Amino acid sequence: MEVNGYRIEPGADLTNANLRSANLTSADLCAACLYEANLNSADLTDADLPGAKLSGAILFEAYLTDAELTDANLSRAVLQGANLTNAVMPDGSIHD
Image (cartoon, rainbow, N blue to C red):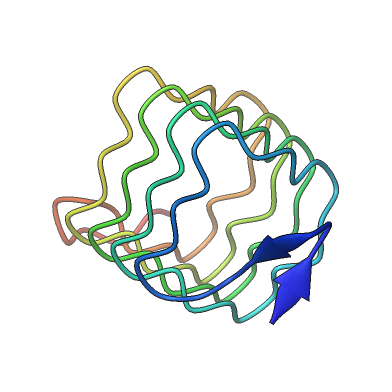
């Protein structure tokens, strides 16, 4: 799948990608590098992000409902206003 000129696939290098408001519903981004990516208001509902590197990513008001984030690196990620309902967090817990 291609979104905003970026190839969306497992292991993709999306460092600094501008995916603001992108529809990434059910996207498979397992182990993808999303360092410093702009995912502001992106729809990541039901996305697969296990092992994704989201350090410094902007996820402000992003939709992460039912997303799989097991072992994802969320250090320095901006998550204010993000919808994490039923998301599986990096530690394996399910967010309420």
